[in-house]
Image 1 (cartoon, one colour):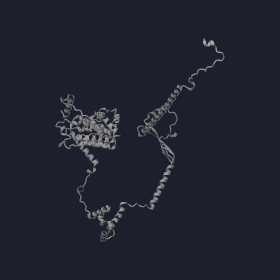
Image 2 (cartoon, rainbow, N blue to C red):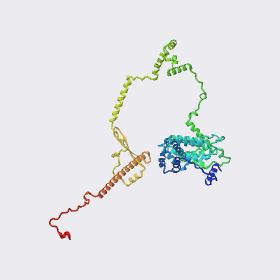
Image 3 (cartoon, one colour):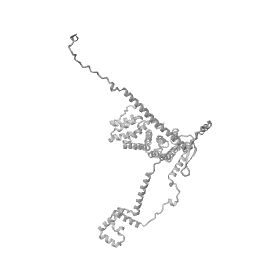
Image 4 (cartoon, one colour):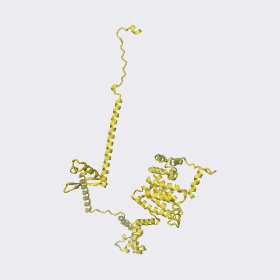
Length: 521
């Protein structure tokens, strides 16, 4: 049994039945660390990414400890379920607008983890390496990583520590190990279809040729070849390899041998670096003799220029600017006697070098600039006076070119139906003078002109329908509002119909003698 399979069996066995006397010691973490792990490793799923972004934004990112631990958890794509890696990339993409430095550290950690996996060949890290490759592809899909970085990673997978000969096997990429093929397929299946720009697509096409070369290098290894004609190469890896190319480049013709892949790589090298393969003469390839010049004179001029630029007073006696037009003997005596004066003269001579003199404009230049400004102003004013011409797309057909209003027979109508595969057009041509001539012709319905006209008509019709629909909706809404308002007004009680409480009549004292019987009986 393979060591990787044996390890999986042992892990499953001891997970169900733990060894006696062995206790699992749980690591005690700070409260905020436990909270971050709970959000990323337990609560995160496809439906609550926005909620997790809001909760992580509330963390104290200024705290160094919390910041580093959050970056550490966001970098561990192998600690969550495989189908949630895309959700983790979506979470990092949402945080990139608020915590840019943290996201950069997460991306760096992903690249470092993939690189470390390539330098250490260990079957225990298989699932981790697959998860990180998937994570890198999802980060590219969310535009957090550039295509150049993904291509560099792909080239590293098939070249880092890989031996170019079957006689010298590599320690980090043994002959029987096909895991790097799976890494490349996972990364290409995740993000390869999104290499849509011209540069990235061309770079991916080049890589696919190198990938086929690596595949045939592995398949042609003596481990998978024997005296018999039986193919010992794993069929699952072969199927995964072909499916990857089928999804990326369905029409690509795959290479059929290791020699064909090496020849394709040589063709790429000749195409990209033609100067390496261009024929040259032996004389050009050999080292040529160096022509010697008057080095003493050049050194003297160089030293003079250097001393002049930095204002060295020690080499003032060799300054060509001061020796110009004077004898050497007289100049040497003057330099010894008037050393201070020469330093002042040297500084004065250096001023024109440090500050270039402005070029004075001649009379012709001033006249040219004046005429140019006047011409530009006149042209601008003339452009303002020109009428604005409207760009008319649809020009109505003249009445003379339209079909006559005479009634058509049944046979003529049937002929028009049979000729429905063509679209009639009227071409307007400028004739003699300013007269316009019209010529009618029919274009096939599958031509670009007819298809373009039909598409424009369909777009115009859809736009008119949408405007009409919006207008009708607005009208219906206004009518509904008017109806609701009328109902509300009818339900209101008018002021004239309000019930008034009648006051009791004012008591009027009866006149005359009171009726005693009515009062007491």
